[in-house]
Amino acid sequence: MFDYGELRLLILAMIGERPRHGYELIKVIEERFGGSYTPSPGVIYPTLSWLVDIGYTDVTAEDAGRKRYQITPEGEAFLIANRVAADALLSRTVSTRGGPPPGTPAPVVRSMENLNLALRMRLGQGPADADALERIAAAIDAAARAVERA
Image (cartoon, rainbow, N blue to C red; front, side, top):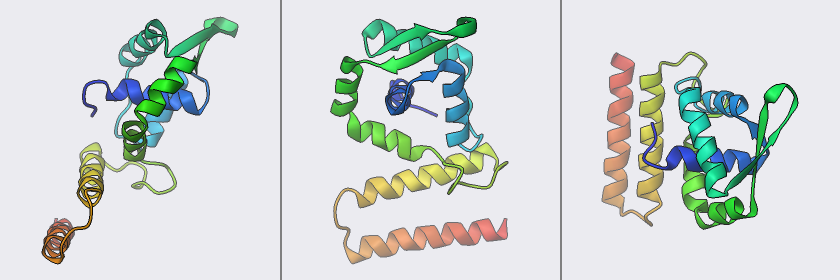
C-alpha cells in the first residue's frame, strides 16, 4: 500500500492536521481509504514511537492511559520540506464524500487509486501533446468498456 517512509509521512501529516490518538489514526486511515486498507496496531504504534524518537511528535498521556500525539516544530518543518509528497499521500486517500461506494472490494479501490495517481503524475509533468492525450483517453475508454463487460 505504501512505499518506504510513506506511512510515516501520512501519519505525521494527519497529526499535523490536529493531535490524534493511535486508535484514531487507524480509524481515520481506514475511513480515508474507503475500508480497503486498515493499518494494524503493530504498524501504527511503532511508527508513532519512531516519530516521537526522531522529535517530529510529542506524546501526552491522558485518561485511561491513552496517548495523544501532536506535531512538534521539527515535525512541522519536516512536513513543510516534504509538502508535495505529503499532499500526494493525502490525495491518494479516498474520502467518504467522493470515493467509491462503501464495501467496494480493496483490489478495485487500489486500481482506481492507481489510475488516479498515474493521471495526476502524467498530467503534472506539463502539457501533453494531442497524440498523448488521445492515447490516454483511448486507454481509459478501453478500460471502461472492459469494466462494463465484466
